[in-house]
Amino acid sequence: MEQNWNGLIVISMIIISVIGVLILTSIIKEKKLQRSGILPSVHDTTDEDIKRLANSPYRIWAIKRYRQIHKVSLKEAKRKIEQLVSTN
Image 1: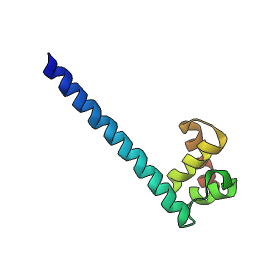
Image 2: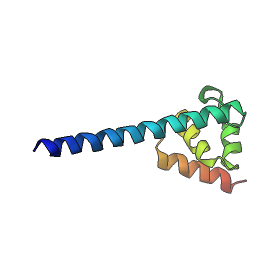
Image 3: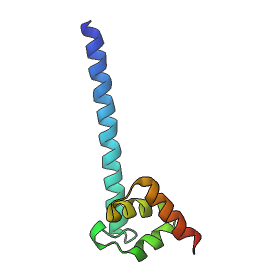
Image 4: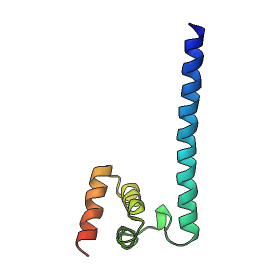
């Protein structure tokens, strides 16, 4: 019975580690894009910045920023960004 718990603990630790790496990777990518001038900080992002991102290869970041600024669901943010792209 003790071996079952050990296996579960190891699997849980691996899952937590993978999640941590994914979060850290996202933060690093965001900082890199900010330093390069592609992505403004959350507090400095305007609707024009979101439109620019939506029409660039960084559409996912447009969705993320829209969600952060407007406090909407992923579905709503994606719908809004798709509307921005289709109107241009």
